[in-house]
Amino acid sequence: MLNHVFRFMALATLAAATSVVGAQTISTVIPFSTATNGISVDPVRNKIYVVASDPTDTVFNLAVIDGTSNTVAMNIPLPSGASLPTVDYLSNRIYVAGCNSLVAPTDCTVTVIDGNKDSVVTTIPISTTRGGGLTGITVNPLTGLVYVANANDNVIDIINGRLSKVIDSINLNGNSPSSVALNPVLNLLYVPYGTNQTAVVNASTKQIVTTNTFGSSTVGATVNLLTGNVFVADQEFNGSSLVGVLGPLGRNVTNIPVSAFPTGVDVDSFTNLIFVASPLTGQIAVINGSNNTLQATVSNVQAQYIAVNLVTQMVYASGQNGVTVLTEK
Image (cartoon, rainbow, N blue to C red; front, top):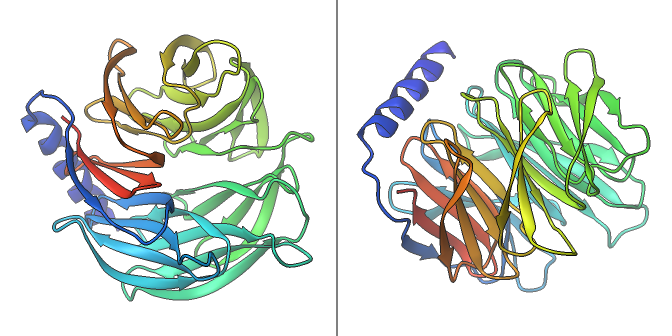
């Protein structure tokens, strides 16, 4: 396990040190028959995982993309309604959250996949309450714990990845999470509520440390593990949409205007570049985290979700046009 960590850190550091500054360009588009959903990257093995359904929206698969060729290597069957993957690159397990709202009661689950065998290990039931669904998922590779934003029950469910079962939950005091992000070093969770609030949660004590006030409709978050800064996408309804920059403990640093109604956001902790998908305008905003300014905008990318491979410095945007692959610099 430690060998994977050292290899990952060495490759990422080398990639960041040898990169050449330039403009972000579209490298290729990986086609799918319908719009793709959530996306996540395994930087150690250079694999990208994206959830896709068939045209009837009844058959769901986890497409495994080879990051070297940027082609789909295989498809792994998922339950109906699956949408959001996350990768534990140390244990090589993938967790996919989703809800099938077409059945009663609602069937919300997390599917556990063995990345070594590309096969399903088990499917964990999460919630049968009808509501906002499962809106986010993240994993701490240092502890093997998986955190699921459960907007049905207004909690963060905690899964023990090694046991493949729900072991606890974090009470959000009646607030509905719109996503969840994690700093595994500080063991802090960042939970936007879809309002003007984002909670900072101590994952060890399962207590809310503070609640940040910013924006009006916070929807997505990501963490730079080196600086500790948190980037929260906010869908302003009156005025410019924003990405809020928070300190590790939730202090407001600054706000950065971006294209209307941003959704997905991800960061390369080594290059300190943040990528924000705005599907309504078909644009990807590129933020320089060193000075917290908008560095560039890439057009003609209809993406709702985004994931960065910080080893290869490639960006994967998932949405209406399938998966668009962009160079980071």
